[in-house]
Image (cartoon, rainbow, N blue to C red; front, side, top):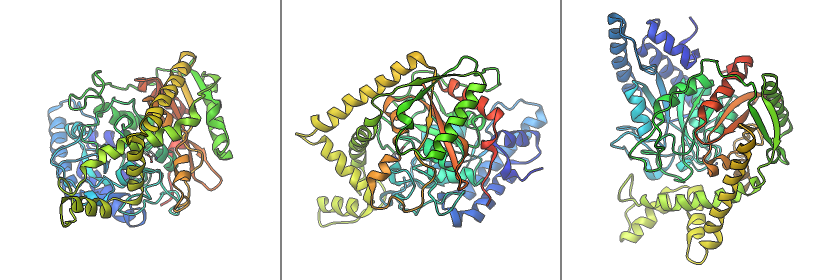
Length: 491
Ligand code: GLN
């Protein structure tokens, strides 16, 4: 038997169900590995070892009973450990969102995605590191220290779901939840050699997700391969009356039985995603992967998404505008710590002034400005109009192609500190991921090679709204004939 932390999720499920291993043993193996690697990687903000072992014991008694009575276990995730990004609330576990302003906040309820995983019987290992309020592309904006990339500890794991990505890449968890407002599942998946799904906007409830940009926020999954990601996605998606923007569609069950081929699938290659600034090694790995898709029957079509160049300015108006409104609730009175001032205004000022980090303050200022009287039409209103053009780009592209193939990020994982003091350079890292969020379409990132430094290269497929099955079929086909997703960092 290989070491339990080497299992894919699919293998761990088999081992649990056959009785080869117990959930307690599996959970303990992950906790031991976290203890070993966490000092170097800093993937977690809060660990939940005790609760995890209790949940594992509960799962074990169910698994034993099912086996004894020959009952078919209908919940594949029963007894499976998982890590949760610290912007999703878990009842009774501190939720910081990477911010000091929430350093002492323990939520009294579960996010819907978490509640559904709990019903499925998962074991929650802990809460993973993130840029403060998910604002960033590197985890460097976390108030709890940077997370290190398991492939090269001098580099970032990407962000903002960098803690989730590092945890899965380092085998400190078999799978993890992340969130993607502008790329925060796909880009860290790409930087850490993982498969990461950003579902259609509304497909997974945002209830219990600490809001960043509410019209863009999605809850996604990071795993070692698409089959693992699909298993978690299956239990978290679907209508939720607690989120008014959630889809009215019932829960979708992804099926990757291999029957769907790439024959006649029309793959669009947007010229705007292969321009200036794209690292040559990233481009050649992505183009090679496209050849693999073609060799399996996909038709390759050059396409255009002409408003791509506006995605960065549009996103960096809309996301901060929404964030400035969402973050108004952190006033030192309702959640977390308070710095007492001489009067109410002074209390607000002291609490928010001291406990929000630099990037969060920058976004609040940007957003407040973009929404202020006299400027709203020129900035926020204009951005909304251009957002509609970006959405239309995708609509017309999907009239001629089924899926769109592109790089996830212009570069592989950059060095910690590379963009220190240069927020614009950091924002430009998001150029290929933001458009999908602005349009609300689903996307999936997956590994397609390594650069000359041995750092993973990712690419993404984007699909029409609610076409997650088609996206995952395509990646499943690719992962059947390639083995980039099997490579592991030496730790
Ligand atoms: N990097 C982008 C930002 O800083 C996206 C973050 C995200 O998807 N949460 O806003």
